[in-house]
Each structure stands twice: as structure tokens, then as C-alpha cells.
Image (cartoon, rainbow, N blue to C red):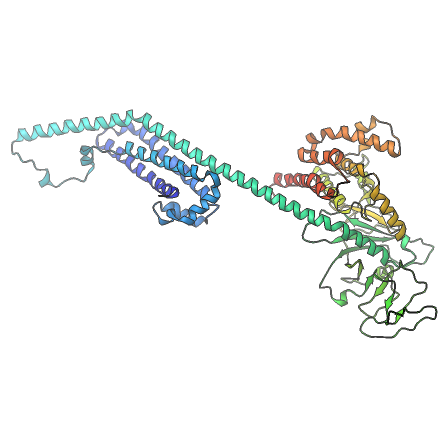
Length: 601
């Protein structure tokens, strides 16, 4: 007999115990002493029902994760059914309980033995009592064999005396055996508690294992995504930088939205701006919001132009027609290239060529394209090093320009005492996660050439009312410098200050934790206000002292993220992005999950 089959037998024992207890009640009623045991009887019956319900609930808690609700209910209703002998069900139970399966079933066997003892203790066995509780016999059967009335009377009196003595003996037995029943009930209680604890600890261990496994998978997916972003974001900047092809390139700039991206896909949200001097003639546009992504199903009508950065020359054919282009006298085609080539004068290796999917003006520039306000789903495709980005315009924020007097606000201003708005703790922690994730994605790319500071982070008003600030959508700003200068700057940024690369991130996390700037804190005011490396050293000393209170203010997870930035980071480590995910981003994600748990989300 399997252990789980015994579980069904035990479940069927409780109704038998109650039936035996009801026989005691009937005996007491026939013997006219029920009123003397009524209280004890009621308590005994309620105890049996209580332990029956407790045991049923333990069984349901055991079975519901591995069976349907209806199947569990049907199983409990039929204690002697065939399903209790199912090998498949027993295998599922072994997998659910793991190493505690054998002990769990042993407890059920011991509990079943206790139930049998309780049943034996309660069931009346005296033949005289059983006869009294049996259906009445016929008159013929009750007629005495002797016709002597005195003899009949004496016999009846003797039987009556014996019955009274028997009933009294049962009453005494029921009353005096109370401690025995109490001991058996205590065993039932102990067994149920053990079953409950074993199942609870098994579930906790399984939950922890699943949590660790899920967290590991999530972290791995996050690391994989973050490792893709630096290259893609850098290529996007290079593609934009080379796509301008206009003398006003120095007046162009871009804001890149900082996102804690999902592993499902990578889409960059940017704001392109043009601040041209009023004294010069340039295309008329100031602000364009774009989503830059790969769209395989983008139709030709929706992508009128493709800007390529692979070659400074154009093929002689474009669109659907093949038209030979005249050869300028000052230019000649290489002997190895048999195709006719149009050479622009003056040629420049840093200026991109344009490959058109539709017959458009080959001299069209991205700057001119952005000045076209005609609504389009896709205005074109830019690319660099075999990476393509479709430019999809959209409108989400209020236009910021010199003409309307509006300016974005910086995180530095938001954290200052002069800011009239309010940034909640949840909003601050959300920004902290965005910044940490963005450092992992953008550090050492053209978008983030130096350490990230609060002066580099911008927020824009929404398009709806022009007043509401989307705190969950911060941006960083970058100009489009000449390529060579930009590349040199980028290289220097990669090779300097490696040992202190994450100090600025740690200071940002500190400021967002407490909702105030470092320079406004009492810790920083204790040091002189210098400049350069001396100022940075004093900032670090003040930040380290300030960080001692992070655990009380923001919790252990937030404190561990801050601590790693100051004392645990190693930028020279090739896997620093993975370390940043593990030690900063994941703890900050846990902080965000605490907010969801607290709100019951």
C-alpha cells in the first residue's frame, strides 16, 4: 500500500470516528445520562471535525499546484477511490515534496494509526448496549418461556439492574477516558502541524529556487541587451553625424532619451534640434522628434530616401530608371570600376553619398529633409557599418526653441532648493534606475563621452499642456562636431580616469536617494569649494560620508548599489557592464519592485 493511498484511508476514517461518537450519544440518551456527558461529547465531536478539516486543507494545499481544482475536490469526496492509488499522482507528489516526500507519508501513516486508536476508543462494543440500540424484536420473541409472573418479574429486575450498571460503566468510561482522547487529539494536532510545516518549507524552497532561476534568466537577458546597445547607439550617432551633409552641421544637436530597455527590442527616441543664426539662410526647422529603429516591413513609399555612409560616390543609376550621367571634365573613373560614376565637386571622404529608392533629387540633404513638414510615417533610412535606422517622426513633447522662450529643465535644477515642483521618492528611484542603466548602455560611446552628471540630464514638458514634466523620460544632449575631432575626444574619454569612472554615478544615486544636491548637503559644506581635481576629491570625501545614511533612507538594496559605485567598481575589468547590471541595476530594480508590492500591483 502506497503512502498516498493511506492518505485516502485516513481521510475516510474521520466520518467513522464521528459515527462512533454518535453511538456514544445514543447510548447516553437510552441510559438517561446524556445530560451528564453532553458538554464533553460536544467538545469531542468538534475536535474531530476540526482535525478533519485541517487535514483536508493540508491535502488540498498539497494537491492544488499539481491538479485541477475539480479533480482535487472529487478526490477528497471519494477517500476510497482508485485515484488515490495512481502512480502518476504519486510521482508528481514526490517531485513537489522533493526530499521531504518520505517523511510526509510517514507522518500520514502515524496519523492514520492514531485515528484508528481514536475510533476504537470511542466506538461502544458492549453487547448489552448494542442490543439496546438495535431495532426492537417482535412480541413473540420478547415473550418469556416461563408462565410464572413472579419469576418473570425477578428476571426483568435482574436484567434492568445489569443494564443500569452497564450504562453507568459506559458513562464512567466516557468521562474518565477524557485524558486518553485528549492525548490522541494532541497527536493529531502535532501531525497536522508537521504536515503543514513540511509543505510550507518545501514551497518556500521551490519559490526561492524559481526566484533565483528567474532572476538569473532576467539578469542574463538584461546583460545581453545592454551589451548590444553601446554599438547600436554609437553607430546611430555616426550615421546621423555623417548624414547632415550641410554647412550648418555645427548648429545641429540631438537629445537621446534615456531608457531602461526591455530585452525584446531596441528603439532609440531622439530629438533633433537646429539653432541657426538668424543672419544666415538655412532650411527652416527647429525641432523634430524621431524614433530610430529597424523596420523590416517599411514600404518604399514610406521610406523615400536612404542615406548611406559607406561610399562618398553615387552609382550612375537610381530609382527605377537607368540614366547615364555625364562625366565632369575634372573627374575620371577608376579603371577597375566599369560603372559610370557621378563625382561631386569638391569630393570629400567625410561626406556621405545618397542612394535613393525613389527618383528624388540626389543633392537632397538630411537637414533639408527635416525641414519638410509633410506628414510621413518614415522620412528616410540612415546607416553606418551595415546598421540601418529608419527615421519615424512623431510628436510627444512641447517644442523647445529660442523663439518661444521655453527651455528644458535639468536634474540639477530639479534637485535644487529653487525648484517649485515636487519629485516623489518613487520618481527619484525610477530616475536612478534609468541613469544607472543608461551608464551601462552609453558609457564610452559618442553619446556619453564623459562622466554623467546632473547638469547633463534634461527633462521636457509634454505636448498636452506644455507644463507637465515627464520625469520618467530624461534625455542627454550631444552636439555633432566634425568627425575627426569627435573621434579624438571620444578616444581620450576612454583612456582617462578609469579608476573613478563610476564616482559620478554614485553621487547621482546619492542625490536622488535624499532628493537634494551634494553641494547643498551639510557634508559637502564642511569642505572648501575649489575647482578641478581638488573639488572632485572633496566631493568624493563628502559623498562617502553621506552614503553612510543611505541604508536608513533607501534600504539595503539601494545602499548596496551606491556602495559598489564608490568602492566595488573596476572599470578596467572587461566585464564591467555585467558587473554594473549585477551590483547596481538589479538592486535598483528590486527597489522598484518594492513600490509595486506596496501598492498591490
